[in-house]
Length: 324
Ligand code: AMP
Ligand code: MG
Image 1 (cartoon, protein in one colour):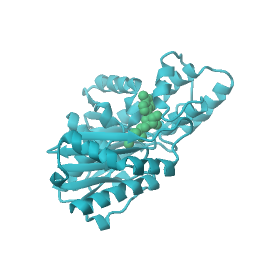
Image 2 (cartoon, rainbow, N blue to C red):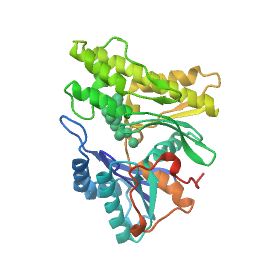
Image 3 (cartoon, protein in one colour):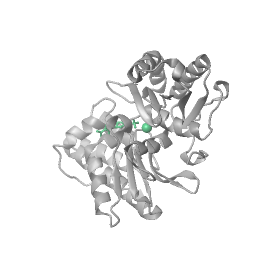
Image 4 (cartoon, protein in one colour):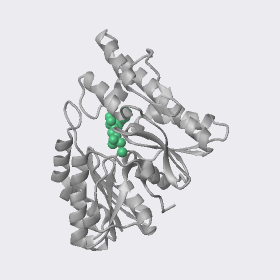
């Protein structure tokens, strides 16, 4: 049994896996009525809910603490105060239970959980709040083929939502508004496999002040931003010759993004397979941390509780991948 802990940003979660099967995936998210994430507040939230989420996960998996072999902790990348809370909790449990820790890179976990729906060697389109990257395994490492040059697509959507007077997370609200909108042109910014969103954010704010309805701006935001992501993902597929695409991250819950990915994959000559994990595995969650921790542990990766450290800025390609 492997326990996973997620605390990199707004979500505190505990997941349990055994032989690559997910037995529990319990999470609680820090939310706001208006405004974005305040890292210290999110960290306080994690501290407050940790013990309860942990107990719920054990109950959901119907296991005892004594069955836990190792604790996987998402120690990178993320918001330092949030990572700290997760690490302290993991350290304390690992010491109590006398089990080792496994340090898991959050972005890589989004890719690995694609295995649970059948992906073997995919391109990951990771579209979340803070992160927007196109990641794939190549020559011994997970490499970033493309990424945002400014803000993550989710943070961009949340900022637009905030300027419309909506709270965090804004993505689901924008998706609702988009259903009744029509197209208006927005800046489309892609360079190679990299994307950027700040120009579109400024333009949306200008158009909103001029009286263009939120519905039209939300619709156009989705069409434009997601087309950029899908174009970058397709370029990575063509470049690497890989034949699978996996979606990850909270923005991947958006049904228009899913639809656009599906169309792109089916229209490719080599019929790329498209995998979209269940929603509970798309958003930040600890099941993917437990799952990845198990793969890593089985390849010999473990660390004693006093040696663990957080790495808020760790890059995907800094991780030594010995489990593949
Ligand atoms: P994550 O950081 O991966 O947990 O994802 C959180 C981000 O996903 C936030 O920026 C949300 O606004 C965004 N999000 C959640 N649901 C949707 C949706 N249906 N459409 C667009 N963005 C979404
Ligand atoms: Mg994430």
